[in-house]
Length: 575
Image (cartoon, rainbow, N blue to C red):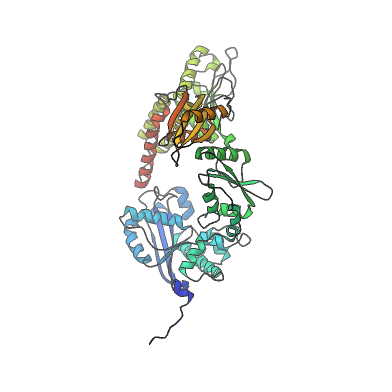
């Protein structure tokens, strides 16, 4: 042939790691959101074949004040960045520095999100460089016996880095270089010799995932709930899917990257499935099962009983009280709130508009007590001293109930006036606190009014188009899913609806705005009712929202938060 044939090596299938140019970089920022916060420092080290061939480091003017806790963490102060260039001035040089290199960062999604956001703002295309995340790589290479966690400071000690991470960009980048080299040495013994091997190794399923693939055998391709169980039958994780087979199989592939879930797969011994008629039924069953069994690898919906309520007590001189239980006692309730702090914020907002007493003693018209300071400043009518009668105080109670259940305007107007006064006095931080209190009240009142619109209906039957041309039909009683079924394409609806209603769960409502199901379950039903194509078949009663309800004020609250984000970006005081 005139040319000697030479058999290629495996290295020729990719770029050998010894020939790859890596740029290991780190960013310091004013916060955790690329959309709301800015870069204060960038540091990068260019390495090839284990040798440093270049460095890039500069402070960056974020365009606004650096939060005090960030300055404490990083040591970067406003005075240090006042003469620094804007990131728009730094970006061209950095992009030139990284051209043709593989980018490396510890917790790369964070740093890349800021870099991509900066490119978008300044009219540059997002970097197309291959990216390696040393945090993700370490989680796949190191065992818990070797390191308790995969934080940069911990890994720097494991690999005996010559540079100690200190939340300064260049120092952290140098430490990450040592971590990268240590990890590359580890994966070399696992057959990883090229950049393509390295990136594929990060995406590959773990040995535990590969060994447990048989657990997905026999899972049906239908909507339903799946339960990962250990060798004792204890539920480890509960999920739902419109296609159980595809979803369960995904846990044993590279697409599953959550470290907690990969750990769970290693413990699991079986997967139990519950086929459901519709996707909504699967979603509701998942919620109920998580709330009952509380699997340790589920993070959401485990403790529906931990919600709190703001109660307008039923006594001679009612007051607002934060409680954990809704009782059938004739009192008015606002909620549910996710925490006592949020409930207290809403209570403070209501007290701004309503002169309800704030003391906790039980009062009566016969027993008198000295008034507190609130009476002296006109914030309470002092029924404890007899200055205000039960009839007069009852007017405040009626307005409070009205504000909780029907119309939030009185509380909104009072808090808005207070925030305007504080802003005029340049007391911006206090105004921001009041805005958060008002938001807690308005959002919860809007949510509760939306829940009550459905929970007050004894029975509703609704249907949505199914994928095969049929209809998914659901019976909802007092906000609780009572039955679910599927009507085939072309069938007459009456027999199917009648049969579903006849076999539906009997629901006996309890007290309060969520009398038969958790707020989360009722919200799932409401989301389904709002989805395209849903039709109401039967409604017992009226499905409506208050004409002057809190929902109409949500946009004004969100607008205030958008202004806050804009103020932070521009360095203006909070309004």
